[in-house]
Structures are given as C-alpha cells and as structure tokens.
Length: 262
Image 1 (cartoon, rainbow, N blue to C red):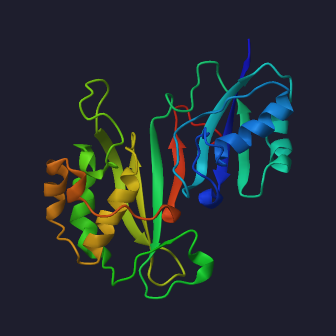
Image 2: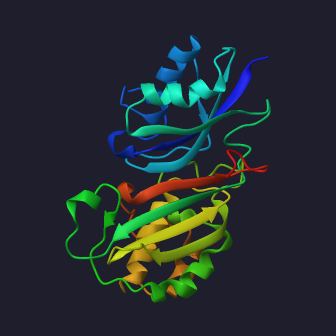
C-alpha cells in the first residue's frame, strides 16, 4: 500500500501565480514542490493541499499530502526537500499520515491573517508583506462589526464575482461559519494593523474582501451599521474593495487530532 505523507509548508507567494499548478506554465507553489518530490521519490507525485492561495498570497502553515511507494525516509522530505527548494518555499515539517487522512477534507477550520499599514508613507521593506491602506484607522469602530461576522452566514457579498455557479444547488453555497474575527495592532510598528479570521471554510477572495470592507469601516468611509445590510444583500457590489494580495497570510489549519504537534 502506498504511504501517505503530509507536509507543513510556509512560503512567500510574491513570486508565484498562487498555489495551484497552471496549464499556462506560470510558476506556482504546487509545481515547484511536485518537481522536487518527483525527483526524490523517482515517481510522479501529485500534492493535495488543504486549500488554494491566489497569486501573491503567503502561507505560514499550509498543509498538503501525497502518496508514494518510495522508501525514502520521512526525514528526507524535511531536510532533503528544503535543500532542493527555492528559498521562498520551506518545509516546516514532514510526517507519515493515516491512509484516510486528506489535507482538505480532514480539515476542521483555517485561520487567515491580513496585515496592513495605514500611515501616509510606507517603508519599502514592508511593501511586500503589508498592504498600504493610507488614512486614519480607528479599530474601535470595528468592535461591534466584528461580533456581527461571527457565526453562520451567507457570505455571497464577500465572494469574488463569477467564482462559482450561483444557480448550483449542490453543497452549501456561500454559507460559511466564522468562529473568530479580530483586529489588533502589530507590535513595534506605528499604524500597522492585523485582521485575523478563523472559519470552517472561505469563498474565493473572501478574506481580502472582508479586509477591504473592515478597513473602510475603520477609516470612517463606511458605517459599521451597514455590515448587516451588506450580508443580507448577498451582492458583491455592496461590499468594500478586494484588499491587495500581499497582506494576506494563511496562518494555520486545524485538524483533530492535531498534526505536527500544533
């Protein structure tokens, strides 16, 4: 029986066209990893990830698994693979998984973090990892708003237009459950903020549209009370802009039992 090996992966997405392998030949995280794994295992390898990140989005804890008949020690998928990968992709852990483990279908929840800078002039060294959203930002304007997002809602207003067939009846549509939403200052950085969201799943660009909407509320460009109207409208045009990809990090994916001692 083939082994089931899972990886914990971190990457800087700035130079890649997202996670998923592309037919057009653009460089992606999945492609870079599969090339090296195929070489290590001496057989074609296909990675199955817990989700997909878009172009320019980063990850601190992506999980992916693959099946192989190779007898390569699991430690090689940690140290050996890191020695072969570009420096903007790193394997943080590798371990044998149960045969029925699936990175996506076994996942219980995910946490994303969105970092941004609200000052007038951003330092060049932070531009790749924090979105620049200039304008006075008051997090207290978000307190009641964040609580409204927690729970089970139809998040159609926070989904990229054209992402799926709105007439399809299969699955749960745009209904998702958020268990945590918060906004807090980043330490040792004036005008630097982070929005953290944990949920059982996310629609295409949902976190970035949520972030764009919440930033506008925090900057006084939208009324906090309008969030209910936005949710009930189920119309992308009612929500705020899609925040830039550079500020988004896939932070953690949750499983039971926990994996990689997380």
